[in-house]
Length: 334
Ligand code: AHG
Ligand code: MN
Ligand code: MN
Image (cartoon, rainbow, N blue to C red; front, side, top):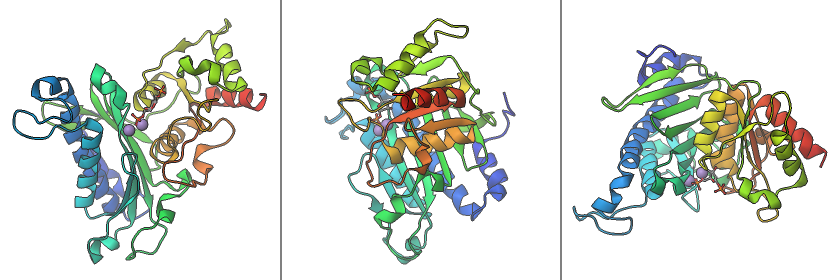
């Protein structure tokens, strides 16, 4: 698949002219993410050795404090982004408030803000199952040269200028969009270089996989229950197969390649579901739409939602267009 000789670094430079805003800056930013991804990948790969080197919260044999991987991933991405002097603000699932980068005047003139879920699917770390990182990039809306405000972060997903994820799986991949399609790069761990392995990724129009935590079935709205029964009914192309890893990034990645739908609905115990609009749903929605897929809260487009708070949750239905439309049909008939 694809031209294996193109590296991510080359691809970023070659494609920067097609980016409608100042291209060199976005390239710098993406390079910051690329570097942090390699560092976090290295740490994730060592996760199983934590018992030998010391568990999280303890001091390891080198006398260093062991950190939880989600905290560590958070630090690595934030450090790497701050160093590039391109970003004026960062919000992270791991931080209560956004970080305003205003240590000097020059940085105040930076235009971009980044929102990240540094380690997605973190409960899978202890059991050697794939985890990921999700990032989302916007231009600030307040004037350059002033400190960022909440307004810069609470933008609808349709304002995103880039978004992507890293999946630390059987191989490590970075998949991203700058609004001109979706491309995937696989890490060659021997030399630490990402190569273009999945150019122009597309969701199949429909598929045979549904991904949902069915343990919550009794709590789901009737529309979701009915859609799940539809998936399980015996018809020409059904029953569908059920696949749920419990890492949004990995579930999404598989469904984009094979065709499928991912759902995290609202329920009687979680009125807005679980996933975060700004760190998880908006970036995945941008990637999905750029790959011919669809992302909805069950009724309307995810990227049209006006966020009210940083850590806002939202129900999420995302994947192959026809499947998401079908789920919406069941929600409407509820
Ligand atoms: P995080 O590890 O960043 O908190 O995200 C976990 C999310 C998402 O990745 C996954 O799909 C979902 O939580 C799984 O939730 P359930 O265990 O409730 O199914
Ligand atoms: Mn997450
Ligand atoms: Mn997380």
